[in-house]
Image (cartoon, rainbow, N blue to C red; front, side):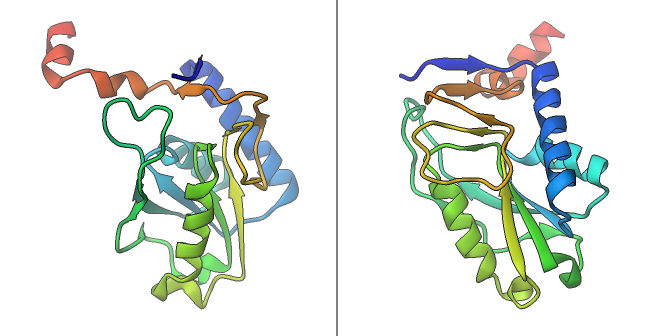
Length: 172
């Protein structure tokens, strides 16, 4: 198993703020499209800072016990979830939590550019994530942390995956 990089909520928020600053200085997207689940908290914060509409692509890739170092097959939902208007898709910023192998981001760009309801409105797609792992072959347009190793990144909400609702009830 890879080394772990444990991120606190404070660290996480600071990294998202650095990403927002980097985007604000270099790009003016018209919509934020997040890759679920990893991008959910990032998109929430970025949309509030940058005052932009959001959309979500639901993709499942990692699954099962012992999958920390492996990427499963990608499965895309049929539709984007969004209240953004078609015209908002002119300059898309595709957001994920990290660039691990690069496969998810590459396949998501391809899927987004071919997605029927919005494909004719997309003139540009740029990408953003919080971390880029050393072995990733994908180069995000915006990324505040470029790692020189390939750790398992333990994000602030990840511990909930190991808790049951019964555990939480007992704790509270």
